[in-house]
Length: 339
Picture: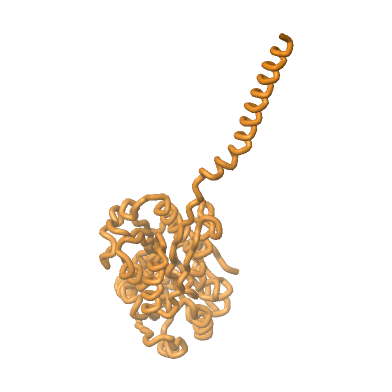
């Protein structure tokens, strides 16, 4: 009888041991099973049509990537950025946009120049497009229906450069009330800005001298020879000017010509004054559009924005170099003074 109890007891012990081993074995497998069931992190792919060498892109791109990282999209982890330079102009942009569509990007950032926007639209009417329009009005050109309801597959940000141009002329008039001759450096890209400059000059009793550049690469020395009698110079916002900003600043200083330019980088390169939107901030906002779209929102549901932060920069080193003084009222309005 003891044998029987012992035998059943042994069988019970063996059963218990088997259950424990089975349970332990199953527990050991749980992490593997859990890992196997976890979905692979989605990798988003975006394309960027950008013109290298321009002030807008060179100062904005780093802010764009940094803001995407802050919003949870990091290159090499869950984000692939296909950057296609469009330095060679319209044809290069159209070829680059078509290649992006073939590589199955989820979104295209069309920065700065209008031909980048046109290339993206020609490549796809369905892939979301985020714009950072600089020298064109996407509403006036029919790319978006309105600020509040863009419609279609396009949204983003844009600067009303004609409005900023009028402000720049007003600042020049306030800075130099005794001067009446204003030269304007422009090209076909900035024709709307030039019209705004003409209207502003007329309303402020300024005589405007048109200095239009054609057939790039531009001959800036010839342009400055054509404005020898000018008393002030307004440089409009063409991407074809920005890579020559140091040369423009040097030529203006040589002719003792006070200049107003469209971006801070001009003043940093030696231009006397600049008035513009905060470019890094524009690209951080563009990154927020990109992040929202990658997370499932539709471009049509994201209102187009305009910059709200602007910078007035004065270079006092340049003022000294050309032998001029500036009114205290202008100096007090400056957001930054380079000394």
